[in-house]
Amino acid sequence: MVNIVILTGLELRHTFIRKYIASSKEIKVINTYCEGMEKSLRVIAEEYRPDDARLKHISAREQSEQDFFRLFCRLTPDYSNPVYIPKGQINLYSDAIMKAKPDLLVAYGCSIIRDPLLSEFKGRFLNVHLGLSPYYRGSGTNYWPLVNGEPEYVGATFMHLDAGIDTGEVIHQIRAKYSWGDTPSQIGNRLIVDMCQVYRNIIVNLAKLKRMQQIPIPSNARLYRKSDFTEESVRILYDNFKWGLIDRYLNEETDRCAKVPIINNPMEYNL
Image 1 (tube, rainbow, N blue to C red):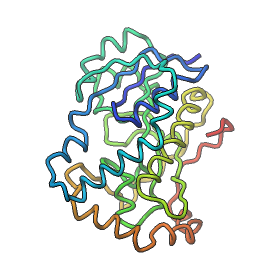
Image 2: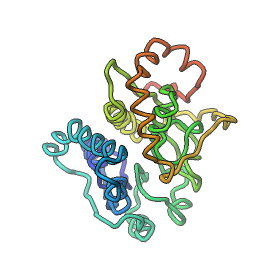
Image 3: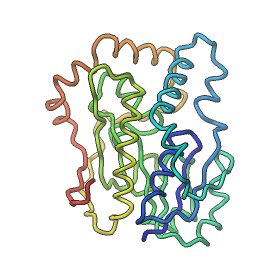
Image 4: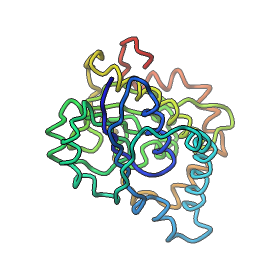
């Protein structure tokens, strides 16, 4: 049995992940610290015009999350022991987290973590980054590859958390799966489902996994922030889909992925 504390958010995808992980018979979730939505894209989007492409994109993403995750979240018992806290205040709970003595801390979508948690749980602090590091880091790292016409860079990175922005030692990575007719939100939510299953297996089998040789930071590595999320970028995204981005990618997938190596932990634990 692995005893963990989860640090996450409060949107539906966060609820899905914490309830899924907590449902494992091999994992005991002591507490889940769920940060509020005070600084979410939805809150920011409320300042936009009703016809703003960003607001429409966020609304489409929220509806897709409902389609993917709502039924599971509604019907699955909650063994994650949630503690609801304001956004950005997770570090104020450091003493309570350390007093609980978890084997691992498990992060997804929480605020920036600082000492003493980083030092206390060095090597025992897992994070999943929705994006492929070191190619894309920061905010919206599965949004920007699609804006830039690079679906091969959409994925998830499982890493040890450190003080940098998506710079921790990588344990394993997965790429997004695509299908004809996909929307951006369908791609993202399908990836979250796959990511959640892999994350659970990494938590259970962490001690057995190999340390992997890291990918050097490429010269074309990109770092995005929330302020880069413009109306024009959303229009480019949907124009890309309209003009066959995913169809072209599916025809070129093998060659395109071969040019973008990812870390694939070879251990046989259904990663």
